[in-house]
Image (tube, rainbow, N blue to C red; front, top):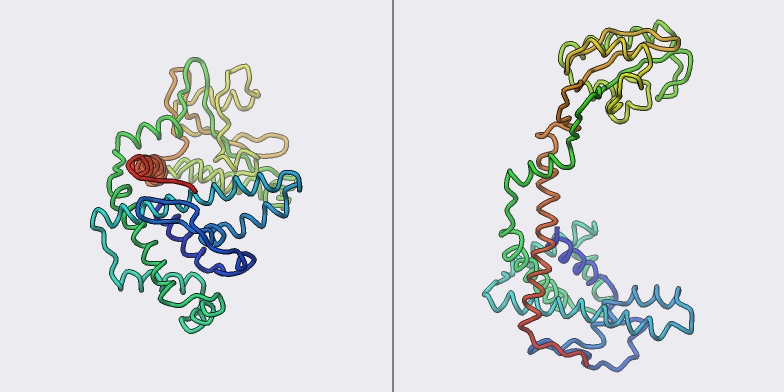
Amino acid sequence: MIPRLYLLAALFMLMLPLYGAFANVVDRSVAIVNEDTITLSEVNELGKSFFKKITDETPADRLSETLQQARLTVIDKLIDKKLLVQEAKKIGIQVSDQDVENALQRVLANNKTTMEEFRKELSAMGMSEKQYRDELREQVLSSKLINHEVRTKVVISEETILDYYDTHFTTKVGGSGYYIHQIGCTWGTANQSGTTPTQAEAKEKAKKAHKLAVAGDDFKELAKKYSDLPSAAEGGDLGNFQQDEMAPYMRDAVSKLKPGEISPIVETEDGYHFFQLVSSQEGKIIAHEPYESVKEQIREKLSQQAMELRFKDLLKSIREKAYIKIL
């Protein structure tokens, strides 16, 4: 989620040393964001690992230009951070000491460390606990703003979810095709699990799966569990066939079926097979997954997409009203 992404990224950045390879650089302002400034030390702190990677991987003749572009990228991220904090304060969003404490406890839990160990780490980094909590307060403030202005204003309707489902989880089968699912239990050769069943074992497994299918169990789930064929991974889904494209034993098995019916078990030279006719000549909408099983997955995906767009719009709107100058 956007809030979690910005919060966690910032929290873990706070774990980086404040003073390292750039400690000997005299600090100065590099950008103005309304009434705030961004300093060179902030840029070097946030971009430390980024700059190191560029330095290690960029040819010497391009290093200066590439690092300059990287610094501008980091400055841009810091501008966004400043703007979010300013906007949150402007609309009256507040962060209590308990909010900060809760966020700190999540950091400790995520890093599997104690407060005592964490304080030692802060000391080694040259950072006081008060400095850390102040930085953390700003991150929580930004997160609350994003929740207030983005997450709470994104609503995904049932109709939108259904539209997505129809587009991505169903297939329209029409004309003269036969849409078929298959379960096959083979013998004499190694199957998907690496074992080599006997003919009797293959027959018994096919009979068991067939009985469950006829009783109404989900055919695709049965295929994943019982079928030895490559199509098992797709729930036995073979797709659409014309009559003249099917092997004789398949055509004989499915041509007399009505959509939804299960064929008898057919014996071939190396296995036992049966089929489910999903759709015949009249055509049908085929659902690859039941709607209820993917509904929340779709809602989550669409919510994420909508929040990303709204977040970009929020930042754009804030930027348009702000005074920003890179020095």
